[in-house]
Length: 100
Image (cartoon, rainbow, N blue to C red; front, side):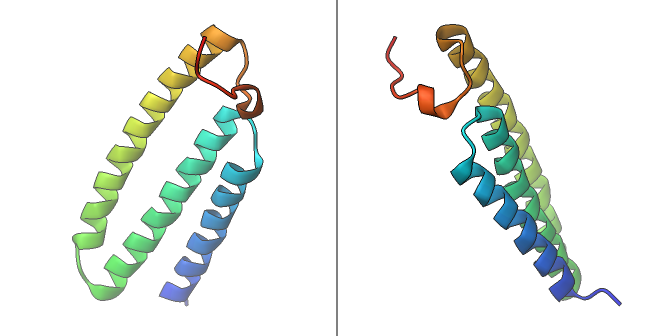
């Protein structure tokens, strides 16, 4: 039988992969995908606790988190396209300043 601990372990593993991707990768697209992994791991934890406590609060928070993640993707990709048009690169190391 799957318990809350299994879901929390899954959430921790996904969160760790996301944090590792944000800290170690240099491509902005990979960093954005890693941020999405972090958001999804939080969503798994919220739903697991919501189910365990028989409350809808966690599930409502998940809807708001998904909305924020969608906005983050839209803004992040818009910034990525603007930076690529200006600098012709998507690597974080080569973007040492935002001046033109």
